Length: 169
Image (cartoon, rainbow, N blue to C red; front, side, top):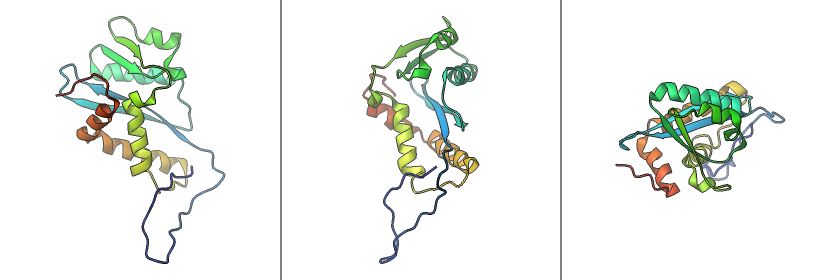
């Protein structure tokens, strides 16, 4: 649970001290989707925090089922080749008429806009912010993601940075 340490400011001659809990191997995993409306005029972020859990096919499938219920329309999934995104369970979830799967090339995180979201949150909103327990880490991560959710220009920037041919109005 060590924070990502970035540059900070303090009074001259006073080194900033960041207290943190050591030997804590707790973590918060997350799964997210950046959704573009069919008319390509709106962008939305959906996410789920998974405290003390790993992202696996079952959790990804559960997230996709909730996402499909939220969107009320067939979806096209463009995602990386993370192991949890591959397999029979995911193929069953993407039944014909409800979801279509497209995969990014292997080892190409620069094409995934959600990777830019996580990098932004870790280096800006969550940097220099030590969490002392799992609950506060989860709460801070959720708060940071919700803040990004309410900033469509920021989300558009993540998408534009990938240079994928997905035109937004």
